[in-house]
Length: 393
Image (tube, rainbow, N blue to C red; front, side):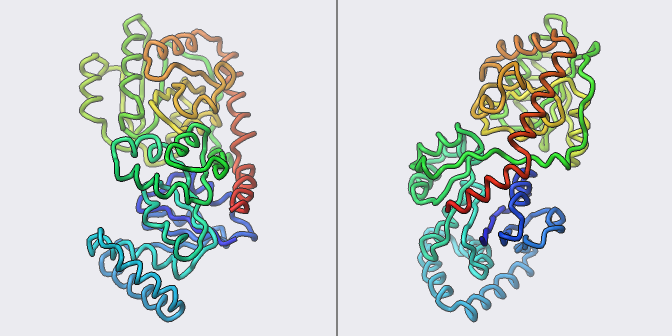
């Protein structure tokens, strides 16, 4: 099969790279399109070819012209169809139309059997591949793009309603995300639930001590957005501090904390208890995980949080809200702990109960979590499921 992936204009997350690598074999030819990709990740895979759109204006223009001429000379019928479609994009400004053309021309010059879209918001730009050229369209259902973005964007809701019934196959990492897609006209029989892959060979760090010393070290990792529920976590931390528990709460994030969060920390007088860190090196995040006592995931909504998968493999106990697909991943008291979503008192109760557990019981939970990931999320296992998924297209 000739399978193309559009990774967009932002750095893709590790689990997407793992997903691509999991199907890299002699039976598949994989094409990757985008502008900001860690190309070194794919150096060892002859089956994977990258087509990167330059960001420099001069190179960007040359890239557009070269692909334009290539399509004209090698695929004149395809060229004519594209130009007619291009002229029909009257709602777009000329700059947006040229930007769109620069993205799609390399795809049209290397037309795949299947085009896999990673981000729901971009489907309107790519559905013409199906309508005009018969390419099968696959869409991954990602948390924010399906759970949150359409809620306050009527145009996006309409785009989903118009296109979801025509998408050939959906990839969901949880049942909860699959159910959200049904609201916009996705056909249930076309949705496959396949967990995010984890490459255990790349995560060599493991936690090996579950004793909690005189400071309870709680860790959260995620984007600094309201949907991650850090305000819930802070209220829980305050409650525990007030009953005399010594806590160190660290939040690792790629962006600066919002004014709202900083105000809450100041208002609750938690400035000596809460710390923000920024790491660009994933291994440093894993090292920090191995030295923490638990991962706290207070999210208001999630598909399945990839940071939870990583923590479980590292053997760091996970305490999560029961939002979205997290209750599909975590079996309460077996491989982690769940508290009621948006309820900081429930969070406090679970944290307190976890704190009182003997180290040997925490270890059992951690080992069960690791086994869960190795059984269900290992990259080779997911690769087989994805190959079957693509064949069903």
